[in-house]
Length: 446
Image 1 (cartoon, rainbow, N blue to C red):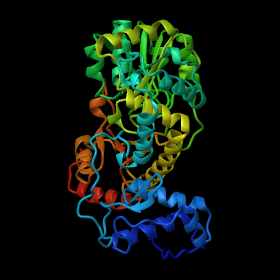
Image 2 (spheres, one colour; image 1 turned 135 degrees about the horizontal axis):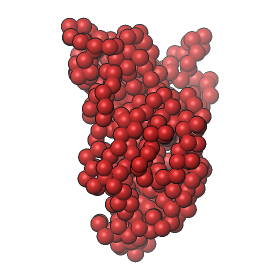
Image 3 (cartoon, one colour; image 1 turned 180 degrees about the vertical axis):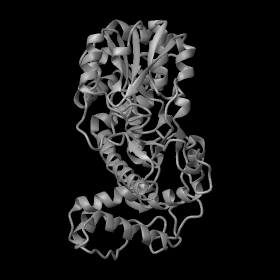
Image 4 (spheres, one colour; image 1 turned 120 degrees about the vertical axis):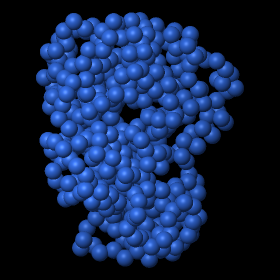
């Protein structure tokens, strides 16, 4: 276990940030080598005369950045892939990820997940690995029902939950069962889900989104609507209380994609619509943002008759989701590991969002930043005449996850773009945005 020299300037404040910075530089410069075990948070806190929470926050920051690895039962060690050269301006920003909505996969709780899988493999009877209920493992549905009631104010039980392979599959199954000829969708919306929705045979009816969310008064002649009320994609707007009330009065079927509900920063939590009208609101969610998209674990909560129809359709199509992963997620929920990981990543994403917003304000004040109260992306209004594609290309050239809003619209609109911040470490934001501005200087903006 390494002894550490960490100077602290208590007059500067932000002690956790100072500790993280000193450790980061020690790793970069080779003073802390790969595999070096760091002191336990309680011991280091005592040595530095700070609270244990300060050290925990610093360790979690560096784990999220990939400099450290936290191993259950083995402490915290320096990662083998951590950089050890002196810090210097980067020639090319090393951030990857094609979608602005993607989480930081380096933050996946590998050790907690491994511990959960080990627990499953050593405690679950062999019969549990046979073909099971296509609606999902009962233990997971019980834990999810409890979680959704506690965190999202949902009106659910294990009986009206169905485990699916992510929100995309859940929507496909719901529309397959509803057989609705017309489906209202938000305008703008994620252009990646449009082909999926059309493949179900639904006729899409675009409804404009403004600063209060979906224009509910435009819902005429349709029987169902799909919307993201907690944090609309791409605009980041939260459905206002007035619009929520109007939607409840409207009376049609609501397909609620609980997108970005986990990561809120500057506002109080907003309960899901399903809790207001469980008889006609179908709630869908997943762990794609909170853990990792590759797990392909999601759920839908629907009225009992519809939930049974979806469960039956799931059984006819592919016999259900992998059971080991379901048991592992149930274990994480039951033991509190899922909540702890969410709190850790919420703190980290807020730091990254704040750093990106500051950098944009300093280097590109022409861009109007919106939709930052929650989620993993920012919505940027571009000045009139600017070319979306060129600005996005400049951002992507610096490794940023960015997309133009134009392809997400059903109708014409002003130039805008979305930019993800989940994979952009806070200490790199200023340099990357500054270089983005330089690369844009010679481009035509209209």
